[in-house]
Length: 217
Image (cartoon, rainbow, N blue to C red; front, side):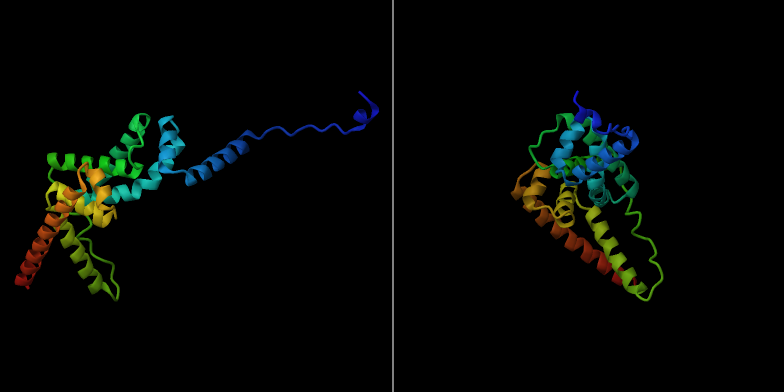
């Protein structure tokens, strides 16, 4: 060891702050997950990554719940379907194969859960369809809009299962006919036929509701 080496100051590295380091690592992981595709997150979930699962669930929970509510017309049942669907994401992740987009696979799970639930249980009208709007200058317009929405909800709820699914997926979830066909595991032409029949039924039902409402006034 020479004199120059001895003359250098002896620097001791500060101890690693484990809590701060873990927080930084978690922040980096959160940033990575924010940019990750659904498929990449699903691969992480398959390896038991709970943080990836939470990110994936948060990303899709609102749309999944909305889809369930429109399919079931019952908020409590829709909440249960959401929980069961997310449980299936966690359980099935190790066996999941990216043969279709994750959203398509998830919507297929949700639609099937809704259809199965409806086959075994009668459902009530939308829980919030009869809520009284807050008083405001536009209260009458708001009430009329809510009544119209409730009428559409009742008409959709009365559709046969697969017609209702086709309408909800294409008109409310903005899926293409091809994507809806993948969710329903059928052909595009079958989805188109379902939509034609559903729209015909909806027009007749809404006209009947309007005529009935007019006869009572």
